[in-house]
Every structure is written in C-alpha cells, then in structure tokens.
Figure (cartoon, rainbow, N blue to C red):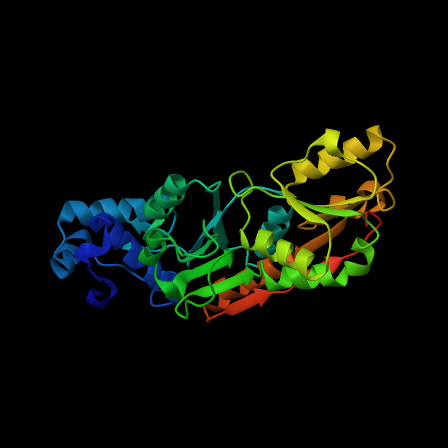
Length: 331
C-alpha cells in the first residue's frame, strides 16, 4: 500500500486531499479493484506517516463519494471502481451542449461527470481548477486563452488532462482536441468568395473586449479582404441604423445574429439576396432559421467523441478538428 501514497509537499493540496487522490488514482488505474480490502486507520497511519485523524478524514470523504465502504467484520474496502471526470467549459451555448452530450453519450454509465463553467473569468477559472485538484480521475477543460495555457493548469497531471477547443498545440506535453481559428477560417472564406462578391460590403462583427473569440479571426478577415480587394470592415457591434442593401455580415455571437435577422425583417430585406449572413458555430436551429443560416463551424459532436475516447483509453491525443463552411440560404 505504501507505493500508492505519493507525498508532494509542494503540491499545494492538503494531506487529506493527497490520500483521497492516492486511492481514487489507484482505483481508476486498476491498482485497486472493487472488493479489495484497504488498510485499517492505524495501519495506514503507520505506513504513510499521516496522523490517524488525517487518514480517518480521508476515508470519510471516500465513503461519502461512495468510492469505499466499511463493515464491522471486513473493515474498509473498495465499493466500486469509480471514474470521476472534471469538465470545465467556457460557457453554455447550443453548440457546447452538442459537445457535452456527445462526450457524455460516449462514456460508460459508470463514469460520473462534474460539469462547470468559467465564463472567461480568470479568477473563477483558477479557483475551480485549484479546488478540483486530487479529486478526479481525468480532467477535460477549455482554456481561458487561445495562445497561452494558464499556469494553474500545470498542477494537473498531463496524462489525465485534455485541453479542449482552445489552446496552443505547440506544447507537446499536452493532450488536446482543438479547432483552428486562423488558416481554417480563411480557407472557409475562400470557399464562399464567389457568393461574398455579390455584396458591396463585408462586415465582421467582432470586439476583443466583448467577444470571447481569438483575435486571429480579425486579422485573418482583414488580410482576406485586402488580398481579394473586398470592401471589408470590422465593427464592435451591430448597428441596425447602418443596415442597408448589398451588405454581408460575419457574426460570431448568436445574440447579434438575432439582431441582424430582426432588422432585416423590419426593413423588408431578404436574407441571401439583399443581406448576406455567415454565422460562427453551427446549431440545429441555424439549419432552419431564415431557410438556413450559412455557418463556419467545427464539428462539436466529433470533438466530444474524441474527448470521450481520451478519457476511456487514457492514450495520448493531439487532434485539430476540421472547420467547415456549410452554405445555406442566408448567403
């Protein structure tokens, strides 16, 4: 049992948390099986060097989580082979729901998942990760920045960690399933170029302050317009009073997509003829609204399946999920 207890004074977690983590890790890796007996409080205290009170508290936490049980004649034993997954997403949206459902549906029912959101708040992001350390078998999280992996993330064992959707793929020690926000976006615009040329003006609705989306999209858009001699501009938000015929919009936030569609209806503009729209991130609703909204989107269901495979197989994974242009009537 001694080799199950790995004490790291600099780990930033308490001795109780270290003990809880040691047992959940042993169970998740198969070192401890369902029904296996565990040391008594006295024996584990002697083996580990921890106080009896520390061992007792750790066992109580494991019992509350239904990971271990105790019986008068049997002592402590493994109740079930628990796999608890920590999932931290940036926010809740229709396409994030697709991702999570795909992830959950491709995991065994015995796996429990705690789903949380950081809403691009750095303090919340750090607090949620700090409080999760040592409590889970695997970690799946959306980074708060597209370019740099937050330092707090380094406290998680890389073998148990998956960076999802946003992050830097040049870190070879990280597992990731991400999308491309630069060259893939430009590639999609080129596929739509003939349709875009029908319009006199191409407008990207984007603000680094209010739109939680990598800034690479803005620079890629401006370069695309310059190379193809398009009348392109970037606006921080949609201005309904500036709407006029022969404009095409690229919109990232769904709330602004709704505003554009409403303004088109109020001004009797027809989508795909008078006003063009390209929206970021596909959802089932965008397939039918206005006879279909053209989208630039990655496959979030595929991203969820890849994440589930990583959690189940615990094998290295480094994938960039393709981003596609889906042309519908709005363009």
